Amino acid sequence: MTHPFPTRRALFCGLAAALMAAAVPVSAQSISGSYRAEGRNPDGSSYTGTVQIDDNGGAIEMHWQVGTQAYAGSGTRNGDVVWVNWGDTYPVVYVRMPSGELHGTWSNGRALERLIP
Image (cartoon, rainbow, N blue to C red; front, top):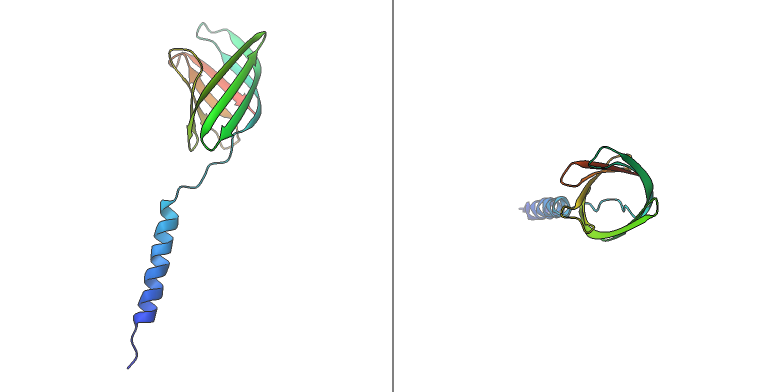
């Protein structure tokens, strides 16, 4: 008499491996690099500049250059959402788009910024 145990065992191990793989989040593509910034201030005026982003495993460091003004901030990343505190009351909140651009709001949603790789 043969036992179906090896088949059940193989099925159980395969199912367990599939569940474990599904439980591990897929790491998002790094956003490190140089970007062109295009934005709109809370008063409606527009601006352009450059941004350097360092993504160290979800710990984010950003450096903006807008005209003669330089800004720096740090924050976190969770998947495609990035929060950066840069010295204002409210953080900049970006969402990474499929194109690689980052679309964000700042000044409590009254200002917009698009970062283009």
